[in-house]
Amino acid sequence: MKDYFKSPPFFITIGILLLVGIIYYFSKDKYYIEYTDSSQIKIVNKWPLPRVLEEVSAIAYLDNERVACVQDEVGDIFIYNLVSERIENRINIAKDDDFEGLTMVKNKAYVLRSDGNIFRVEDITVKNPKVVKFETGLSYKYDFEGLCYDQKNNRLLVAAKSYGPNNDDRFKPVFAFNLRANKIEKEPAFKLNYDNPIFEGLDAAGDEKVFRTSEINIHPKTGQIYMLDGVIGKLLILDEKWNAQDLYIFNPDDFPQPEGITFSPEGKMLISNEGEWDPANILEVELKGPPKEKPKIETEQTTP
Image: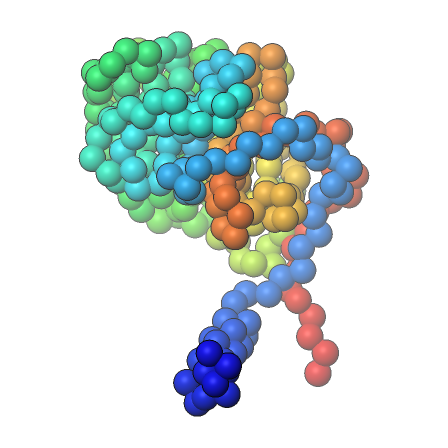
């Protein structure tokens, strides 16, 4: 074995690894990111998720002990027990596909596919529940990831990660799915515009990357709308009239890829992260007031 470390194949392998590292470093985008002060974002609890949920894309609160989860590219709902830290049930809803959003309306679960189509699971408490698929007429080009229940207006909110209608790249749309008619409303309920003052200083990565919605939810006590960005981890808080109030930029050491957000009826906030070097996880998070300083993203300055 000692001879291997002196052999040509060993040095060739090391050379390839170094070359790959250099190419990656010089080809990737480089930004200086000013994260929100960690004293304002308290992680109360942390639950590591099993490997089968490594790409957890959404979570929904069930009770004090359980959350429902969906995994990217898997057509199942996973019931995860926060006490035992184990999956206690797995409900198949469709063949494997790009499932991104999840929300609960009593015992009914609604699951969002990235093309905007919605699957309703009639009762997740029974064995082999009935599943109904709703064709919304939307498409994959929007890259839908966010889904939540808007109880006040008896609708679901469906948030796009990518472009608006007709490839409009000036905003990210949020559509409404009427639960009485079981139809998507043609015009967006809200347009998240890049020129919103809340995003001032965040355009170094390009307009399209200012905010890429990975999830949306509504605080059960305040009615505020919470939107996550999973690429450069951010949390945007808006009031009930969609006026932007606060923007947090997460440190990736704690939030490597925040993709899911849910609340208990009392307002306890849970955020899920996809796994990267470490396992995927669910965090219980408390916010300690609005950000002290306005976050920003700047291009990295290099010395000639």
